[in-house]
Every structure is written in structure tokens, then in C-alpha cells.
Image (tube, rainbow, N blue to C red; front, side, top):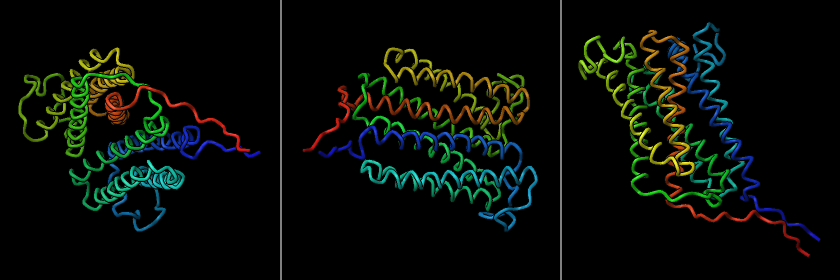
Length: 315
């Protein structure tokens, strides 16, 4: 008597891969925060060359070199982790196209990591590097959730109206715009272009839309647009299962993020608050990505839950 076990792409066998991608997403989240600390400590050019540091694999260290070199080494370990998970995942047909896309994203991110150094922190390279890092992180988390739920086949979801899906997409676009504006403010050192709140110069909320002040003001205004959209979505989706749950998470994170942004201005960009602001921004991106995933799944995934694979005896 032989026993036939569950196939390789069964939920039971996909769970370790799901956890692996979740861990890699968490590490990438930490890398984003480390990147913010590199910038906050003025260490972006502590290693003036790339991919080596002062022409060495292991340079002589001071605090700034340690930040920059450590950021690079951390990123290398994440790349190695992705390689291991890719080898383990290749047997799952639904993973192959996703893995190609993730590796392409990582390759472009590595190129822009080098360009930020070789082009002496040109603002456009810094901004793109930040955006790609967030996209890479959310891609890993998205893959993890798809693996955990067998690519949607085992999900139980609620149907939601098309108007609510459009509101979710509006939130996602606003989050994307806020991420671009935040990167632009950071890369242009415009974080203190307005040093009070809610006004910018003590008299006006929007004194100008030009230069560093304009970047800073647009970043503020878009944050309040995002808050309003998330508040509306959290209210309208409150009884819509995980769509409502992620909307509430997004609203809460946005409120805390606005508070951290105000504190950054009033306290003149202390490094711990700058790191917290970057961490909250990345968390909002991830929560919004999961919100989009749930909203799309609610429109397309079947309601029935697939039965768990059974052990079959072959005589």
C-alpha cells in the first residue's frame, strides 16, 4: 500500500513559501527605514564609489560609512534571500511570471542604488530609488498573501459595489502621489521649507507652489486629501470584511503619519522622528496595497472555499 501526499502546490506546501516571502517583505521594510537613517545622518555619499566603498569590499569604518556600507550589505542579503525563495518557488507555475517581474524590479532598484551614488544624490535618482524600494516591498508582501491563500482559490470574500472599488483606487493613486511628493521633498531637502504648522510662513497655508516651499506645501495638502479619502472609505467599507479592516488600518496610519509630519516640522527634523516618518509612509503603502488586493479579490474571487487536499491511498 502506497500513500500519495498532497501535491507540491497544495496550500499545506505553499505555507512555508508564504512565510518566507513575508519575512523577506519585513526585512525589506526594515531596509527602507535604514535607508531613511542613511539620508538623515548625511551618509548617502559616505561611500563615494559603487559597488565598492573606497575601492574596498570592507572599508575602514566611521559612523557614516557604517550606515551606508551596512545598507548595501543588508540589501545584498535580501537579494540572496529572494534567490533562495525563487529556487524553492519555481515548481509553482503561478509563481514564475511573478518572480520574473520581482527580479526585474530588483534589478532596476539595484541600478538606481548605484546611480544615487555615482550621480552624487541627484534628486530624481533618490526619489526613484525610494519608490522602487516600496514597490519591491509590497510585491513581496502581495506574493506572500497569494501563496497563503493559494492564489485566491481558497479566499472567502464579500462582494463590494463598483463605486467602492473606484474609491479604493483613488486612495491608492493618492498614496502613490504622496510617496512621490515625499521623495521629492526629501531629495530636495525641503523638509523645513515651512517651519510652522498649519501655516507655512506664519500667515498663509499656501504662500507659493514654487520651489522647495511649493513641494512642501503640496506634500501637506495631499496628505489631507489622503486623510479625507481614507476616512470616507473606512466609513463606507466598515461592514465589508477585510476591505473595511485595511481601510481602517490605512486611516489610522495616515492620522499617525500626519502627526509625525507635524512633529518633524516643529521639532526641526530630529533623526528618530525622520525614521518614524519613513516607516509610517512604508506602512501606509503596504496597507494600501493589501486594500487594493482585497478590493480586486472581492470583485473576482469565488465565494466557495476549496476543500483541503485529502490523503489518498493507492492499492
